Amino acid sequence: MNTVERTIRALQSEPGLRSVCPRCRRNFSLRQALLFPARGPYPDAAGQALRHWEEELRSWRHEITRRREQARAAPGRSSIATQAGQLLEVVVPVRQKDVPHREWRPMGDPVDFLVFPGLSRGRVEAIRFVEVKTGGAGLNARQRMVEHAVQGGKVEFRVVDRTAQEAE
Image 1 (cartoon, rainbow, N blue to C red):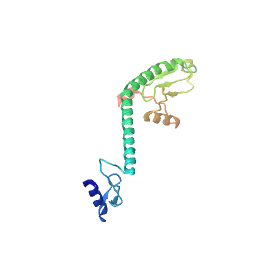
Image 2 (cartoon, rainbow, N blue to C red):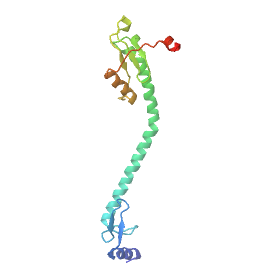
Image 3 (spheres, helix red, strand yellow):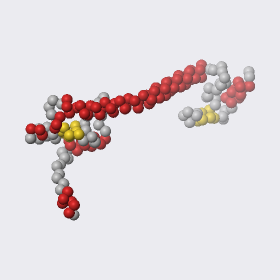
C-alpha cells in the first residue's frame, strides 16, 4: 500500500472528519465519500463520473465553437437581410395590385408606409399603416405601439396653423 492509499484510508477511518462538496456546497462525512488517487486507478463510479465530465466538456467546447461561427457569420447575414429589406420596401408599392403605387407614402420610421386607397381617384377610402418585413421578422416594440394605437382607434387628424403659432 502506497502513501496515497494509506492517507485515503486514514481520512475515511476518522469518524468526525467532514468536508463540503465544491459543486453543491453540501456538508458530508469523509467516511461516505468516494476518495481515490487523482492519478488512478479509478473506482468504477469515479471513472463513470470522469467520462461524464469529459463528455460534458466536449459538448461545451462544441457549443462555444458553434456560437463563435454564428457570431462571425451574423454581421454578413444581417447586412444582407437589411439590404434585401430596403430593396423590398422600394418594390412593394409597385407590386401591389389593390392600391396603385402613387397612393403609397414612405414614412421610414416607425412604419414604412402610409397608404391612402382611393386617393388617386379623388376619394380616400381608408388610411393604412404598412410595415414591410422579410424573412419572418416581427414588429419591434415601437412598431407594436403604433399597431396598438391604430387598433385602439387612437388616431386623429390635426391641422396646425403655423401663422397662428408664430403670432403667439
